[in-house]
Image 1 (cartoon, one colour):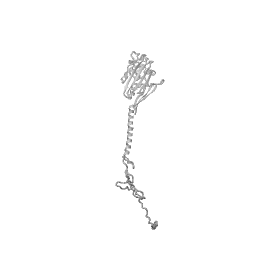
Image 2 (tube, one colour):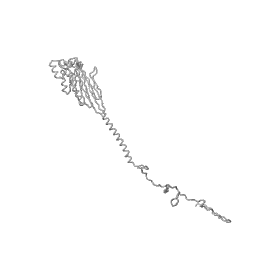
Image 3 (cartoon, helix red, strand yellow):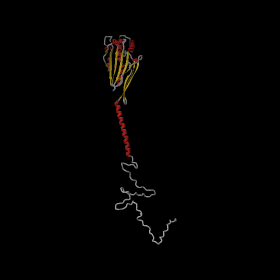
Image 4 (tube, one colour):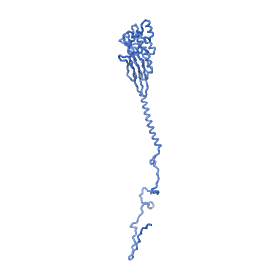
Amino acid sequence: MLLCALVLAILLSACKVDATLDVRVRRNGSGVVRVIVRADAEAVKAAESGGVPIDKAVRLSDVADAGFRVGSWEKADDGSATVVISRPFRNVSEVEGIVSALNGADGPLPALRASREHGLIATDYGVEGSIDLDKVTTGVHSDKELLARLQALGVDVAAIDAQLLAQVRSSFSLKVVVRLPDQKPVTFTPKKGTSVAKVDASSQILDTTRIAFMAAALGLLLLAVVVWIRGGRQRRRRRSPPRRGSSDSGRASPDPGPTASPGGRPPTAARPRTSGRPAGGPLPGGRLDPRSPRPGPTQSNRQPPRQPPPGEPPPPRPPPRRPPSGP
């Protein structure tokens, strides 16, 4: 569509027309597509050779009718002129349709699309497509009004179309500039001697807010796991029975009582001890402690053996006792 409007500016003149397609994508997926067309001084002279200004000679009304904003031609000191055509978009999915409307069926941009994809912690942006100058045509056959005028003048349309096409391909250049969030502009253009170039630009923006929320959620989850594990251990301790011989809540284990001695004899009861008094001391009332040893015979209470009177024979000694004989 736009190239058909520029054909008149290039018509049979040794001129130069440069076009730049600028695609800007913002973080929220909106943006703007702009086309900056610059015609050199020779192209401006060729367009204004009929005595009309360039904004009248180059018809861009069909572009405006398609929903594009068409700026005014701005002339430079060197005689060149520039016009900007733009159209904003709210979603990246609209870029392909905008470029297709600008390109038409005869343009050098067979496909150009933009994308925006949300990830877990980041958002990916991209623009991809291609430039193919070999697909450029003059658009003479698609412009019914121009075709009717040429035929009315008896002009050979096929010859004119071939001549215009050669002029367009030698005098027309195109570059694509992609501007993605948090990335410097990237420019794509066919290398010298070639007519095809691939357009592929991408960028990635980390979602710091989502990362902070995920980190906080992970921290709370770990804290909940630790509390749950500790609570489970305490519940198991309360449910488990106490071991034998171990104290429970500060209480001593019950006394198992006296056990039988070997041989079946009852155990000997332990004598009670009286604390604070030595063994063998006197008891109240003059009684003796049964634990104290009984006094044995002493020299004072022993009686000496009786001596026979003089002249009397000593008493006979008793015969020694013999142990009883066995059966």
